[in-house]
Image (cartoon, rainbow, N blue to C red; front, side, top):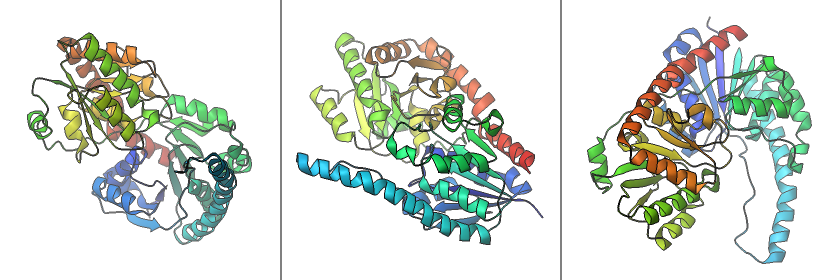
Length: 413
């Protein structure tokens, strides 16, 4: 009888951190050697993403109804007294809800794990501690007799500076004791996790995420026609949620500098794909600075590889809360150089001046120089393209990453 792996995840939608889940569930070598099941906190949005990315049906699927995560949001009413009252209420309510939800989710997951025994529990989490139910999953599985627990952390671990984290000490003590091995996608994230949890070196591994290349359904020419992009333009794309941490505003400042300093030679066209809380701010900046002829904002492009394929290079101007962004290696899979910032695991992905360009975060001047350099030198663009594809093929192709996990499962058993 084959040993059983149970994957577990809790994410409100099928985000980049879920990419490896799709790779595992689609992989035939894992299916051959293991009985595979997947449990997740069910939501319509997550279900849509899962179904669109996982074609294989030869696994057990368990959508669970668990208490969702909540976070603080500023009130619409800006009256000072109301704002203070609102913050005071949530300062109590958020930690109260967190620990009640951990308790109730632990009870529900314990019952689930008792009924669905597994040899290995593989937990996929955003950051650490991130999803509250991932705490519950470790506790409940240990109570249910599952002793081989792998815990994947897909972002930078949160330290104990914030008072809300102080109450997590007891949980963290048992989590790091009960988990067999923690996995991070980058060395940077791994070092931070080891520092926060004071992990033994033997309890941590870095395994880079791998990318399954997806279908390209539109040629570059057809894509440009569809989105009314002038055929003679160099396309630079940004694929990211419109959030402050992604740094779009600094890229817009760089584009404005290019427009002012190189009015006769502005041969680049920028596509921002994504939506989020910064959308109105970015639209206002584009309108006030008359950048509509240079920048196109699109909420959603169904087949994102069509955009990446149509791009000459990709930009990710992030300023915080990144680890090992999938969009960078997705771009590299198509031989696209990337301009990225010097934070977290990004410099591990981009070899500066070889597969792309690494710039300081929050630095429009360096972004401007990098864009002008790539957009004005076709030989350099071609050279970077070849090196980017070469690095992807040697490190980030899906089968490489899956094989490392496959070997880990065998060694743990």
